[in-house]
Image (tube, rainbow, N blue to C red; front, side, top):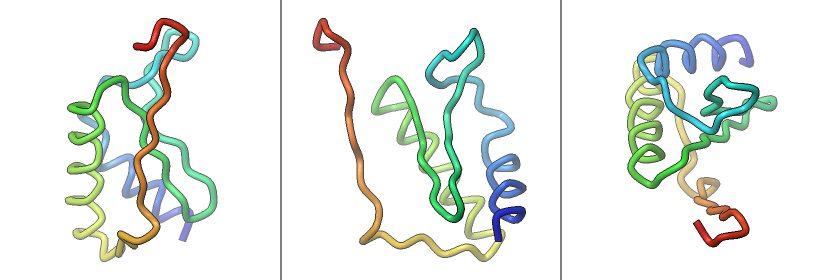
Length: 80
């Protein structure tokens, strides 16, 4: 299942070039086992990531559990 998630995520996010900068590279997702965390700098970017992953997961026949989905927001020390 992990391989299928990797392929699905690659396909879903291949046209996305934003995310949180880590060592100069945009990071927009983390995968651990069958859990996917999407990472963005704005609500708009997070919604775009979510829409792309949702659309592609349907093509791969992967179901998402809405009851396990949640949004978390982190801010820097300035409140941004």
